[in-house]
Image (cartoon, rainbow, N blue to C red; front, side, top):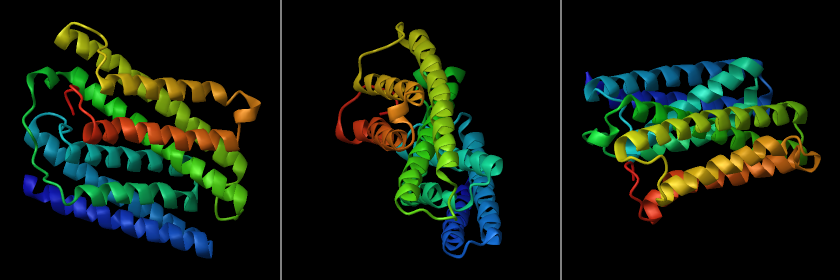
Length: 266
């Protein structure tokens, strides 16, 4: 059954590509039907990707997130799920263009990579690791959603269009994505600390990945406070969301690619 993982992933990528084109058409033509078709395509893509994830999980016997292919795969899956939550709740239509384009880039970047599932090292063989990863990447997905909404907020402020949600709704979406992401990432940090204590005898180590994860947590904790500060509301909050995503990208990719770390997943 594992041989179907890549065809399902290609199917998901095709659905996401068609969804991006649908949202682009919705932005230009103001067609609700196109927005509905695009949402359906995102849902179909997510289901195909879920099927691929389940096949990989069943074959491995654990949540397969132990290399760059697997983590980007799970990041993309989490981002599509996050977008579905916001669109089904708020019907944001053409606002899905940017976030699904980001997701399409994630899918495109992993397709050329080796999909093999590395063996699980003993320190990762615990449900705490699974919880740590799930909360980490769903938190990252929420921060990516906040980044996308922040970009759209600045766009809508500079070049208003009726095909995008108004500034009031975009601000609400941004603040909600940041708050939910912060809660999820806090759970990630908690389970990670317990896992580290059981595995190595300490709750926090000063390796660079742990330090930068804490910086991400502090940054978004500050953002949860900033939404109550008048001068940071609206445009300022959108800019913070974009800067925060840069910190997330460095923590997730930059450290592993550019620096040395003794974190188990680097």
